[in-house]
Image 1 (cartoon, rainbow, N blue to C red):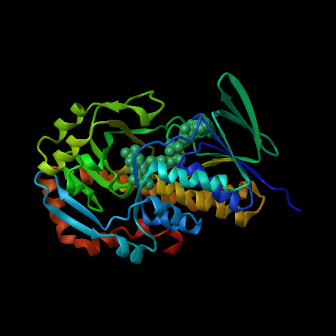
Image 2: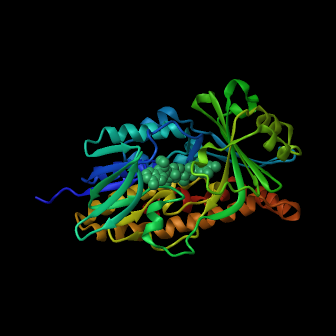
Image 3: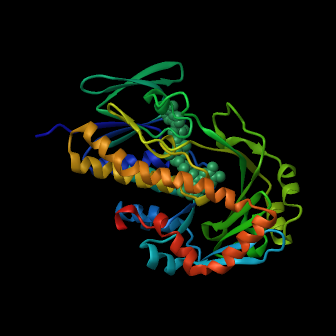
Length: 402
Ligand SMILES: Cc1cc2nc3c(=O)[nH]c(=O)nc-3n(C[C@H](O)[C@H](O)[C@H](O)COP(=O)(O)OP(=O)(O)OC[C@H]3O[C@@H](n4cnc5c(N)ncnc54)[C@H](O)[C@@H]3O)c2cc1C
């Protein structure tokens, strides 16, 4: 009988949790090491694109996610200054028919809850919260992970380590991708808010994802939890980069910082921005794509591997795709750890890198102004829904379905 492999995963965000489920289903034992003292309700809304929903369906989790999620009927793109509609894509049944899985929006905490419950349902997964991974040492037969728990130093032994520890990954730093491998600041920030449905202007409660394009800024909003909340994300050029801030989720921002940026926008957009009381501000970083996500008995996953700008709303979706690919690699490669990690890396780097680059380009397109903005609006109108949807096929169809 072959020995059951033991995986340690640094980070229990969406990527780490999904990877734990996928590895457990591939027959491995998994220990998740999370620096936060508990997996808390965090963050705001997430768009879950069809490529992510397809993976969740394969994992048997889609129905549970759908229980909490909203399925928008439309993606509506508007011009900021007057609210004129530039394009509308039919989602719901049309998305499912075209891309093989639904397009959903969900509160991040609800998705996290589904993933945590699924981990709890796997006897092979254990979650150790309050452990801050500080480094690792690779030996002939395994990896020794060092972590801090309050004032104590803790050691965890495993056959391999997955670094799912986010943008500022300690595991990535230790793999040694060179001095040039640093987060790249975009010069933009995202402000996020959840508006109570009762306080939101009625148009914002329609089951739609709305994207407003303005001068060097854009706005995205959609209802969550059956209209109990409206998720609002405002993205604008911003010189502030919050260097050194560890917890990028928790930087509060005053409404007065945001409202002036939307002063020349259509009244509907201003009403929604004005209805938000509590904003979080988030400097936006990505990294240049790399071909190597692994070392001996170690590999990266999710934002640790391919942090991206949120303009295609794909960061979590790509982390979920990574998790499925990692599980599949171990299913195929059995207990040859490095062969499985190599297969995982080969399956994922090109696709995730392409999404990083496409997200950068999308940001530039969204923020065009003057004649360029005028031309962009004209192209969007001319393309129409059919061709715009076609342009998303590479992204929303899962790679295996191509
Ligand atoms: C404004 C904005 C909007 C977005 N919208 C979308 C969207 O609509 N759809 C979408 O798919 N994506 C979206 N994203 C991207 C998405 O949020 C991320 O890509 C995704 O959360 C990455 O998940 P992750 O698990 O890889 O990393 P993270 O969520 O960063 O999780 C990392 C985990 O590791 C833990 N950790 C960190 N260091 C250590 C350590 N040393 N030891 C132990 N634990 C550690 C952290 O506490 C955390 O729990 C958005 C991002 C932004 C900024």
